[in-house]
Image (cartoon, rainbow, N blue to C red; front, side):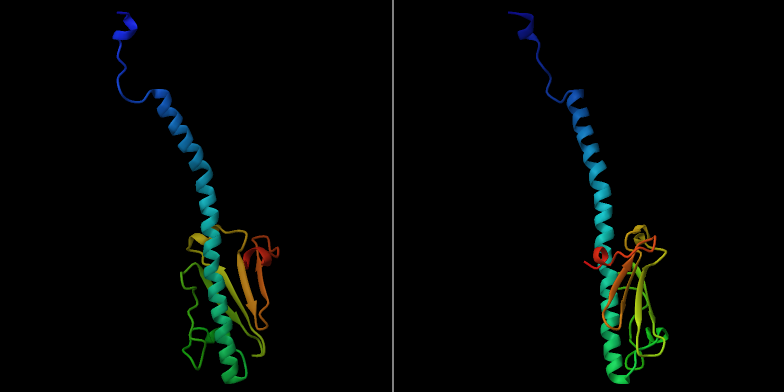
Length: 151
């Protein structure tokens, strides 16, 4: 009997196999985590869009009752004297503001609130919609990103 036949290999994994698995997991994590964070930022933008569409609908109803648009001070006032909306979006990622100078026009704006995770979104810093439905968005540098952000 040769000496090779008498040597039995113990069950388990070799160090090289374990290191290979660790390296593969590290590479996958290095790619997946940043992509997941970007995905979360994009998904949270829907919170701003929903809030602004709610403001637009409420402003249209207010205009139908009062022949003028509500001012920013009337955002939180209950219907029929105001819009009956919160100044923060439904999921809390954005602060909502309404500006109406003469009551014949309005602009609603949503910005990421300073205490939330959405402040990391530098691509879509501010969303806005006006009385004619014009949708706008800008990045941190003030460049127009309407096409990217209002998807």
